[in-house]
Length: 488
Image 1 (cartoon, rainbow, N blue to C red):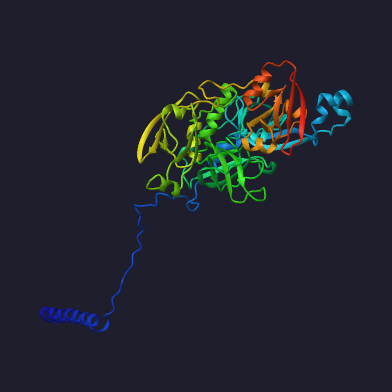
Image 2 (image 1 turned 45 degrees about the horizontal axis):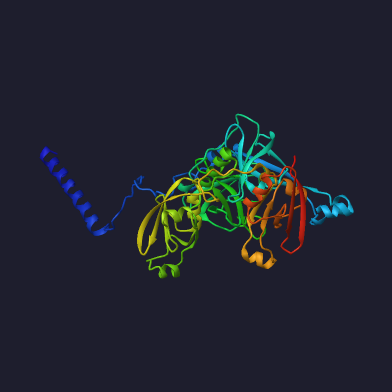
């Protein structure tokens, strides 16, 4: 075969193959095919509120736990209780006719043991806890996380915030630093560290459920602006630490909302914005220096907002201005609505109380109110409970009585048919407990001087060297007398 024939045969083969492929593609195999190539795409956007973590988005709380557990201590207390409720045997006339104790045998006092938690604030042994953990204690013992044990003394306490300060003789202690409770956000993770049911060094976690919560647990004249969380807190956690994810102290666990006495969903902590001020005052003065605006206030609601021609309910309503108080001197009037303190908005009574509680008598605060639909700024000089700007110091003799007091209302005076009276609200360790005085006792006279206030009682005991003779009654109307030796 010559070259020409060979080329012709090869060309025919190429053309035939092309025609065959074209025919198969057009008439036979017309089904399209898709080839998938897997490509891993890295998304540039992420949800800002969900941290990337291998635990499925949950935060790592191990650092906060390790940073706080060694600074939380176990507080154990021992006190005394007596079942004797009769005050008559202490009356001098009974002793004259019937001998010591009125010829009656006193019921023996039984030891009462208590348990709670505390937080070390400094390497030299200052410890913060709740007042209700130690208020009836004669002996206070602190057990560290490394099992060392120390005797503690009470530096001071503030029942209105339920905060107390203890001191142990130690050095180089692990301690916590104050965080910023104002910066806490609803939904933020926190830890509760304490000793529930005597289970030492227990850590639980939850979120902040609410802020500036009042649960009416501390009584009259109290300051309640609790941080509400769902971290599990049980008996024994009181005085322990509420910790943020950076391992900083943001609150002192104080109470739970429960019908059984055990945790059932919500717990409450005193924010460090209050704790830090109370601790500082107790260290410097031995007593909290509480600045007062000088107003009686109430919550705003829609009905009150409509009466004041406000577009919505906001702020705190001034129901009454105390004569010669700080607000009165500044020009604030009843009917005003306080909407901010030092530029920070306030919409509830607890918020306002918490903002003001950070300051001492003599401090100036900027208060903005709404009056007749217009905003008005005022500068208020805070005053103490006595109406001046002096530093309040506790009388040592009054402190030795071991009790807190409150003035009696006019309604209670009418009901009991008395003209004057000072109620004993809480008996702790001291002269009153030794004499058998119980909570609720109403002092009408001290050494024949009518008593209507704590200041009246203070004036009487300041001039006494030995005996204090009290005349009074209990809420059931039982008249009772007590004789107290003021000498150590």
